[in-house]
Length: 236
Image (tube, rainbow, N blue to C red; front, side, top):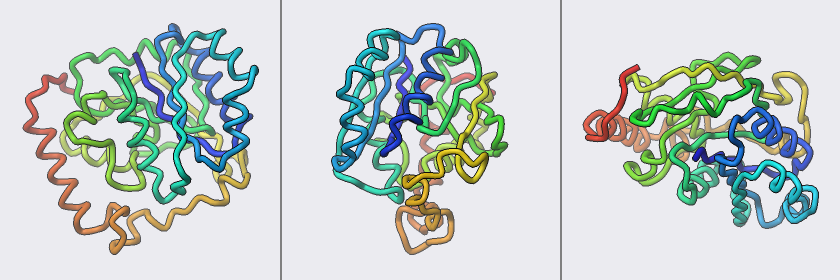
């Protein structure tokens, strides 16, 4: 099973479109678990996820839905949503996803079959080339080993920078698109306006930023743990 980790806020139409791109392109949508993280003050999303419209999608594709409602943490604590969802996931693989992302590859789920791989699978982003894995896929064993997915706001940055120096990043032939306001003008809404990038290597006094001295120590510790960990893995 593949567990989709998807925090979302007040984007019902974008959320549905994003999920349908995953479901319609999956060979076995019934082998997907979709974990949605929503805020307790997000009435719009809560009503949608309790609606017949949502129920019909779940029935049609047969995937396992999990809705996790928490008090609002805000964008600067985005990793807390991801950590919560990853902890509750039951799939062998954890796949980061956004409500403004779009799956482009038919049969994408068939490419996540590296049963002995302990590292990051990377899907190229068609309209946002980036050295990082913007939508990383990691084994559930990651949470078992490290206790969480990421201690910093930008979980994708953390996963990549733990794995890359150890050559534990594997590209898979799956392509996605990021329908983001500053990339192609889509989803220029309230949720996008509330996002902040202040914690992006520029706030060394905030322990949520990867530039914080303790996070730099943690990064080396995680790399050492991954390198020494006895779980068998395939080399890239």
